[in-house]
Structures are given as structure tokens and as C-alpha cells.
Image (cartoon, rainbow, N blue to C red; front, side):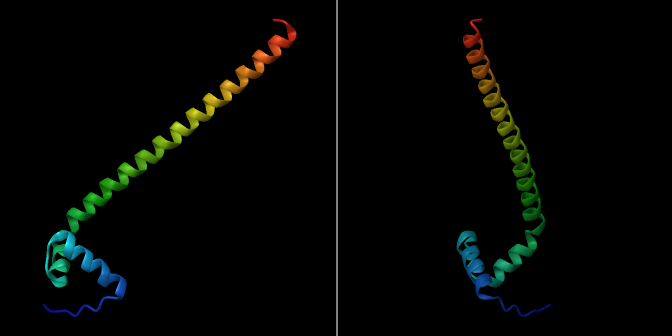
Length: 88
């Protein structure tokens, strides 16, 4: 099977980068490598996104804990100020 591939300039740049990174000397071989490696690349991508989502959830949790800690510290400061004013 033969096909003609006419990439846009941005795709040419990507193919050039892949040639260098993969140590493959022709763009057509890079395309074949991509086709042959599709499943592996897809699995790696899925694992990456799972980790990214997990870290995003962890970040939200950490931000919430920090916010609660700051609120508690502000409440304690206000409470101690009121207590001092009342002479408690």
C-alpha cells in the first residue's frame, strides 16, 4: 500500500523533531514508527493523564487544607483578641 503525505509546516517541524529524538533518518520511517507504536503511545498517554488528574485532585485537597488552616488561625487570633479585651 502506498500513500502520499503532504504535511503542513507545523507537521514538518514535528516530524523533524521526532527524527532527531528517535534517531530515525527519514520522515516516512517516523510515520511508520508512530503507526507501529500507537498502542504503546496511547497507553503511556492514558497513564500520564491519570497521574495528572490524581495530582490535580491532590492539589485541590492541599489548597483546601491550607485555606482551612488559615481560617482557623484567623479565628484563633480574633478569639484571643476578644478574650484579652474582656480580660479572660
